[in-house]
Length: 292
Ligand SMILES: Cc1cc2nc3c(=O)[nH]c(=O)nc-3n(C[C@H](O)[C@H](O)[C@H](O)COP(=O)(O)OP(=O)(O)OC[C@H]3O[C@@H](n4cnc5c(N)ncnc54)[C@H](O)[C@@H]3O)c2cc1C
Image 1 (tube, protein in one colour):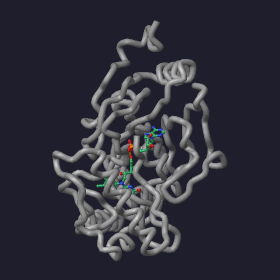
Image 2 (cartoon, protein in one colour; image 1 turned 90 degrees about the horizontal axis):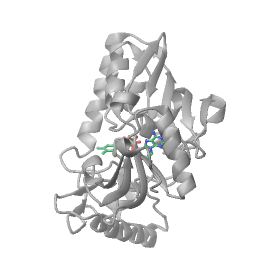
Image 3 (cartoon, protein in one colour; image 1 turned 45 degrees about the horizontal axis):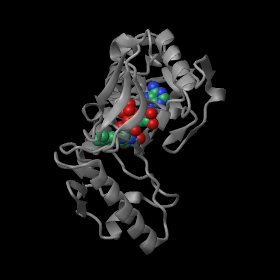
């Protein structure tokens, strides 16, 4: 009997992941699940554990690069219909994990609630952003998280308050759990000033990042005391390419792609960048993008 017996309506086999990530690359997931309730999420997690199948959660796919050979396990994606609700109570905003982050940012700005405008221009979902502690020069999303509902690797449900959470630069302890919903604590602000601040951040992002070619944001984390983009640029790698993958001229920490690119082209370029920067500056560049 198959591990997903009884769950056939929400499990498919050999599903192309390229259509679901910002890079639009890579092979298929052996199993792809779209649970419609908490009970189904818990059930899939438990069955994955029993069947000893690796399980990954896909948010908006803005920070994931899927290998050409695909992922030999289960990929779960929480849909917007069932996990896409937002409730606002005073300065507390509770958002399900599949809520689109840019939509939530716009909504809170329009409600005169300050905090999330600092995430302007960051694509993806609430779940992915909290897992990654997304952010940049204007702040990190973890600073605003007050509580979260998560499912642990054994399928049990937990309500986490702030004391359970650890956020660090582009990382968190939401790594072995599935984020179900997140409560943000924001502050009241003057509507016009807030909208101006939001527009300013959004304009900055548009002027510094490529939005016309496929990418997954910054490829590498900034090493302590350095900017990855600056090191790559100084190492003379702007414009360097492999197959259809190129180090972006506008921002050297982005690898942009042409339609005929393969994931292997990006990974070869990544190796080349890492070796050149290590040789020149003795610095190891760690991937920010999650390679599946
Ligand atoms: C043009 C562009 C600009 C970007 N700019 C920035 C930026 O300024 N700052 C920044 O930090 N990032 C940036 N990124 C990267 C990306 O937007 C963020 O990392 C974003 O938070 C990813 O969210 P996602 O929903 O797409 O997650 P995904 O890419 O789907 O997943 C990312 C990781 O989170 C995990 N995950 C997803 N959902 C859940 C969940 N519900 N529970 C547990 N784990 C989960 C995945 O397993 C994976 O490990 C940029 C990307 C692009 C394409």
